[in-house]
Amino acid sequence: MAKKNSGKNSSKNTELKASKTRKPLRKHTEEALQAYFKSLNGDRPGELYDLVLGEVEEPLFRAVMDYTDGNQSQAAGILGLNRGTLRKKLKIYSLIY
Image (tube, rainbow, N blue to C red; front, side, top):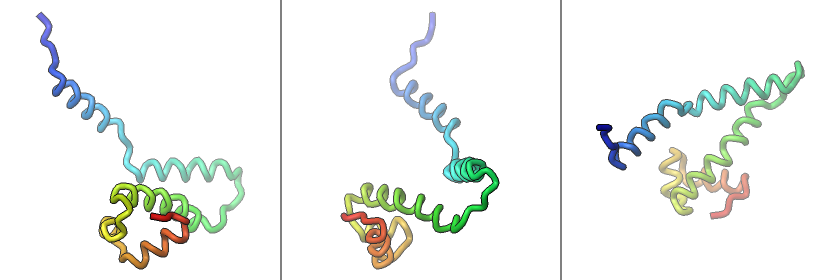
């Protein structure tokens, strides 16, 4: 007779499988940069640091602000920034909360 999985065990097994297939953010970044360099066809990029920060900061700030329901004090604490710096960055990216 086959043993039936309870819903609890089934969801736990799904979580374990998912965690084994997740890549760290670092790996996604590395792969994205490799693809970016490949797409340049030998051309040299300019201002790559600013490009990468701009691509990463905006979604980071948006996600943290959404997570904190727009609470800038909480968001600044999570990000490890002071509120003034956070406000400046939110303004740069036109993120109004």
